[in-house]
Length: 459
Image (cartoon, rainbow, N blue to C red; front, side, top):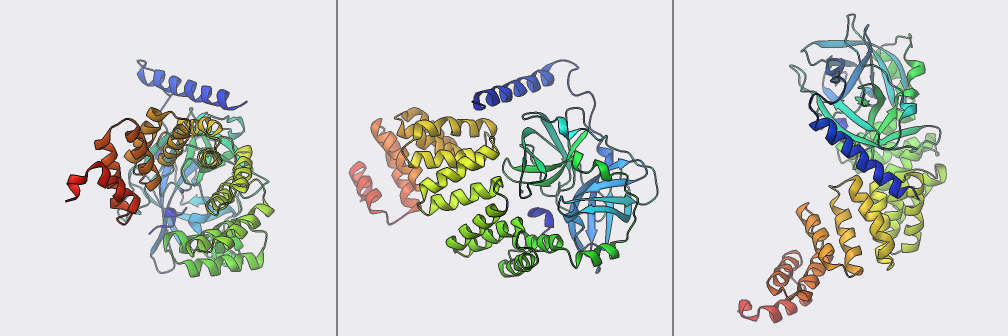
């Protein structure tokens, strides 16, 4: 597996902006001759094939050229343990990377020098002018690293969800709904004018993160050339390189013990490395140690209190361990930092439902689904809100949407059973009981209710 597999009062105004953005895009799509000024220059985007000392491909990523003499931008983590990189362009050219010009391990970007030649480029934009709900698009390749030629340049679309700090308080990321597929890491995030405004860095459900291009502008004129051997030597003492190796072991290889050792070494060098605490919590969760996982998230947040994903995950652990009030406060903190955090909106809605405050939960869940209409769990949580409010038709519709997207929770099928019993729709109520028994064959209550509904079918 490739390294890229791991490497995922304003509310009404915000929703109006989404609606306006979608309407404008529809007009552009339908109007004759209308649309973006020009197509993105995909010839400036390269698939990166990363080799180790044995000549094995150890990673695949994306990069883009910003200087016609061959300066290429990508993520630093794509380079970890590399002894050589080839850049494969859409026109079929395979070009070697001659040197490393600059790396910033903390911000996770690198500048590379391609072999001598003349290259097509992408224009650098201004990330400082981005606003919430601005259009964005990402260019990248799949995670596969072909040996004979490049894959097809893929393009995805979305909009800015906000610019917020993540694990470091001194710089922000662009949070965008634009999906970054496996292999997009290091590729360009572009604006409506096809200018680069960010570097695709992390991918996840509605938390796709791109480093703002303004973070690297002062370094684009870097002239220091160093070989991969020099970078490898430097990385022996790099906590960030060790951290990315740990991530590869955890998320790509499933090696919990190896990843744990890597993170422990990182933390022995720097106990304030918030990301290592954050990912250590994933290991502890997978090992079933909820208390330790909570402690690790709390350590990450003691270092950087406004880390949205850590807040959301910690709130989830509080919720699962019956600490609803703590979960409520933690989710509220996450949304204060990142108001359009889809998971945070859904999670806060779930807690409010649990606390009997479904009237407050409903608008949060509706907002989550306007931002991400494919978020199945949010439909489940919205169904619970409608159910508690006695709006059974809307609850049924929300639950059915969740089921259609692959969610199968016993609690949801029990609610659907109750809805159909209220409607005297016994055939559908019976079907829900049979689904419950498929999921939980020894469920005595479901067996009893099924016997009452269809006694003849039990003999």
